[in-house]
Image 1 (cartoon, helix red, strand yellow):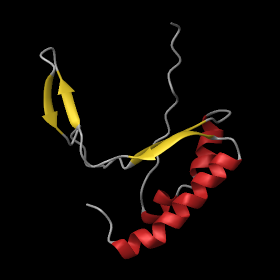
Image 2 (spheres, helix red, strand yellow):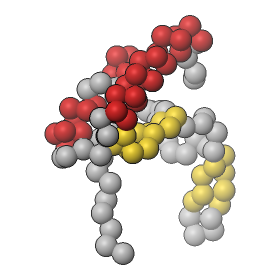
Image 3 (tube, helix red, strand yellow):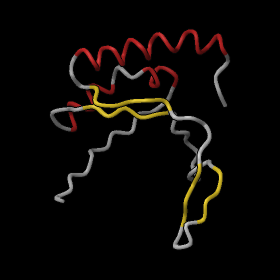
Amino acid sequence: MAAPPETMEKIMPKWMSWMKELQDNGYLKAGRPLERSGKLVTGKSRTVTDGPHVESKDLIGGFVIIEANDMNHAIEISHGCPALDNDGCVEIRPVMKLDM
């Protein structure tokens, strides 16, 4: 469920500031909020259904790809994420390197 407009007015400046800080420090590689709609393609039959995409008690609201020196550096960078101010969470995962 989307936050009420007055809540969004308080939250968005924090997000914009954090994203600008990531960009200014050269950490930001990509990031966008996700739409609440979408499709799910499953199985060998490639069945297409409407989202939500996975069963989960947590909602993924968006993603940010950062470039950090290592996992500890990524954790340090995540401490500024405004989601944490509202009891949210940040999942930190390395991007898998593929030899292709």
